[in-house]
Image (cartoon, rainbow, N blue to C red; front, side, top):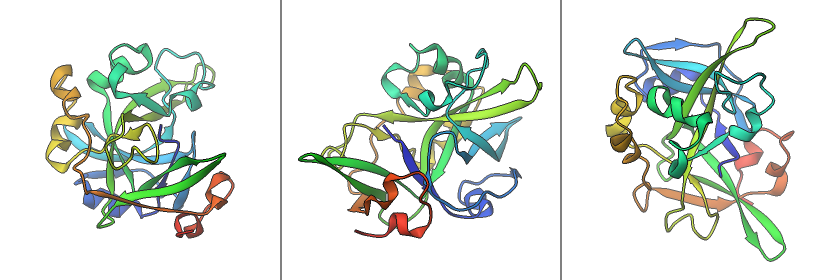
Length: 223
C-alpha cells in the first residue's frame, strides 16, 4: 500500500523534470503529508502532448454514481489491474505519472508501527506509476479527474518495512507508459517491476506524520 507521500516542489519544477509541454493547473500548496482524496499533480498525455494537471487522489471510475468510493481506490494492485473493473479501462488508455519527493510507510516493531520516509538517494522526484479517470457529477455536470497509484510486492529494500510498495517508473519508459494509443497490456505490465536495487534510501521519522492534520517539513525530519 502507498497511503501517504510528499509533493512539496512548485508545479513548474515537476513540469521541467518530467518534460511536460503544458501546465494546466493552478499551483498547489507544498504538501509534506499527502493523504487520500487530497488534490495532487499528475502528468498525463492529451492529444500527444504531455500535460501536468491537478487530480484528486482516489480514482473514481467513469461509471460511478458518486465519489464516495474514492478513498478506497487510492492504490491499484499491479497483479490484478486487468481483473478489476475500476482499473481495467484506465490501465488500457489512461495512465499517468504521479510525482513524489518520497513516500511514507509504517514498519511494525513489536506492538508499534514506526513511520519511515522512503526517497531516491539523490533526492530526484519519483515517477510513481498511476492511472487516471474522468467522472462527471450527475447533479452539477462538472467533470472531475482522479488518479490511483499502482503498487506491487516489495523489493529486498522494502521487505523489512512493508509488504507493498509503489511502482517507480524509469525515465526510458515514460513515453510508452503515457502513450494513450499503446494498449498492449503485456508490454505495459512489463514496466511494473521493482526499481533498481540501491536506488532508494529511508530513515525513521516522527509519529507527527501519523495525523493527516500535520503538514510541513517537520513530517520528513529524521526522528
